Image (cartoon, helix red, strand yellow):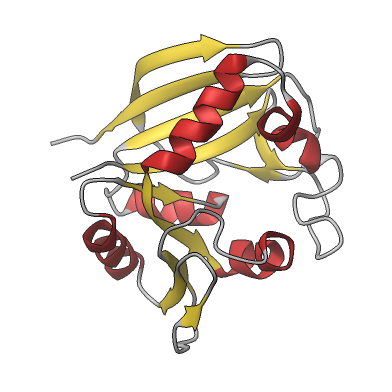
Amino acid sequence: MGNVILHKSISLDGYVTGPDVSMEHPLGRGGEALHAWMFGSPAPVDREVTAWTTASAGAVVCGRRTFELGLPHWEDTPYPAPTFVLTSTERPPLPARSASFTFVTDVVAAVKQAVAAAGDRDVVVMGAETGQAVLRAGLLDQVQLNLVPLVLGGGTRLFDGVSAALEQEFSISSPAVTHVRYRVTYPR
């Protein structure tokens, strides 16, 4: 079995989107800069992290907002893997070119279905609110933060309303970003 892992690019001031998230600006104003390392960094380490993240993904859990704002840009699932969308409204599954979208109304059920679909690969959790819900449910194994040297000054904070103990597993850097992976530890 793989890990349930939250992958997020984050600014130095703790934001994973810029302010004013909308269909026109799905990552908020200035938020696209959080992901520039994925698409334009010449550093081999950044290309390796992107390739590893994609290759290790066996399933995805995301929220309805991430789905609705991302789908027009992705035109498919964000990873070539079954994607489970947390939503308050039940809907039939939606086929995509590389996998499918399944709509689930409960965070525990969404993660369980994603783990079953992923087999021995990882479940990637997308979205701040979804990440918070998975963490609160005690189902998150790891957090992969891609710390971008950027100060957004506003937007969506990743860890609002949650607390967690994290143990650093590794860190590697390029001029564009510092990649840090943590193991989540839960009190017994």
